[in-house]
Amino acid sequence: MATLAPDLSVCASGTGINPVNCGAAVSLTATAVAVIYSLGENAATGGTGTDEAANPNPNSADANPVFVSHTRTAAGATNGEFDDIVIWIAPGILFNRMVQAGRLP
Ligand SMILES: [Ca+2]
Ligand SMILES: [Ca+2]
Image 1 (cartoon, rainbow, N blue to C red):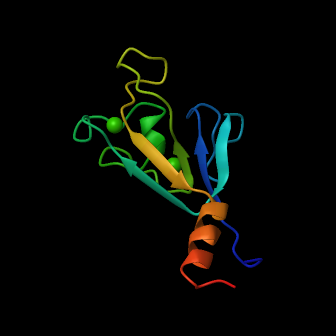
Image 2: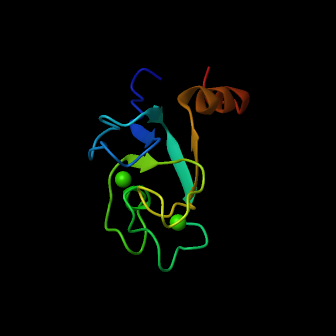
């Protein structure tokens, strides 16, 4: 387990983030082992606002380990429309499940 170095970050805003971590934004996690997200209803046309652009989507070439998650906001919000749904798995949860499955001592 010591060799596992999970580095996926989920931030509360796209403002102040950088390609490797949340930077000046509030960090919800910096050690997720997996991030699962939905682009929401605006998947085809959205994804260009500051916050949604941080989550890879058809309208943003963003591809780094830093994601944004917060409650839904409308198009007029400071960082644009946001309807993505983002969840993540913490290292402790993964370890717990791997022990339960008999894959870790
Ligand atoms: Ca979206
Ligand atoms: Ca990103």
